[in-house]
Image 1 (cartoon, helix red, strand yellow):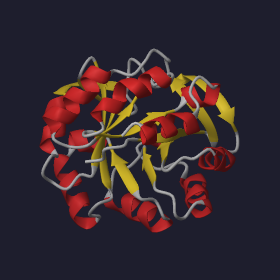
Image 2: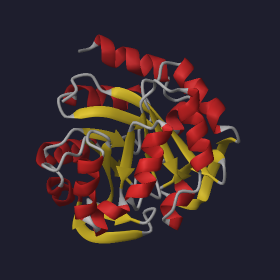
Image 3: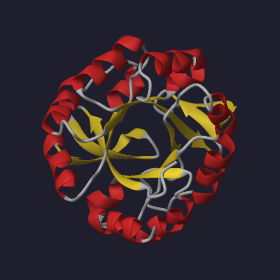
Length: 247
């Protein structure tokens, strides 16, 4: 597991634009740019070592909607690890994205509905599969967070501990986009009990969140940030430098 987490800028795609939602509500969005490739270039320039892309329309529709934009970003930064989630429901979609140059594909809703699909994907695309677990009050949500299931996030993580999943992206829905601080306790609990490296997501606001997560570098390999870096309450370069210098 990674001892130094990486800061991962989020680029959420809706109707071709770069946006941020609050608690996953499609109607409650803030548009930050109509040029996602330029936004990607900005974060790369500021020192991003990985990018997190989300096809929001795809997450709700169940099929990829932003293939062209995603391909353009991957083409622009061929050596940069890029992970993507949203609308990944079949092997063909995974293959298309991997062929386009993406490094990691995040399986969310499909992982809940069909765990065997994750195992198959790990066999076909070893080292490239991440499971996205989005939770509200500790319970897994699916279909763009529209449906809250009766499955505990920790129990879902355990199902994938031995099938070849690279890591878990864990998002606390209640905090996502709300600038209220990351849920350190639940994130660390998921990592410890689930047995897989976790990428923290949801609520990252400023350097205090980075400092709170830093001691858990043995199980947290990345920290996704969106609204905080777009609105300037967190400096990407400063955050990564802090993590690098406090090993």
